Length: 224
Image (tube, rainbow, N blue to C red; front, side, top):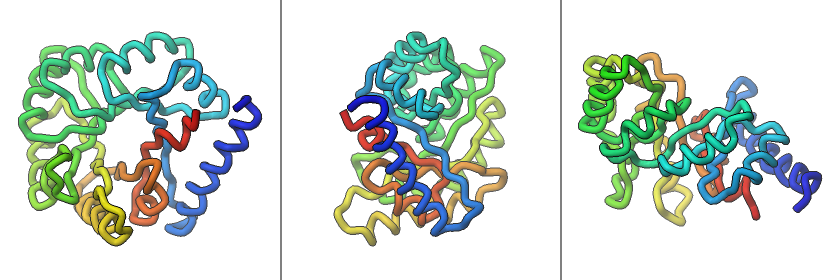
């Protein structure tokens, strides 16, 4: 796919985002984070040339390698993977724009300790396991508000910006929708929260209609 064909293809994806967005409201803004985990620096550059600025990786070493390779470009790097405690320092060396998957109080305390030692802060989202699936990380919906507020109180070096969740692993639209609505309902109750990150390549339109204002798109943006 040459740059021109690629631009036409991406315009179509953007149009789908727009249609879903205006169904919510003309004022509803949706940010796209391009998940580049299976993509090369060259493919990221191709998308950058069309206007995409936020990119996400789910492995710390990949984030480090790609952000170093593309440091000439004014990109915004997001870390979307689950973070092992022994990789915290490596992530903080990179200092991403946003960490999407803060999935437990235990991880928050560990992060807080390392952030304080470095005298730095980190913007993050609390991950909610809204469909209560064993295969997924995140806090349970019933305790999400309580944990969010506890992190705000006990971890001053973590700037919680809102929440993130992955839609239910199901072929039933109603089940996926319910998982998004669960997350969005929690998001609305959180003081100062501005980001509700839900929706991936297969379900982003539904996520936007349920209130998401940040979507994480991988395969649909990198068709090759």
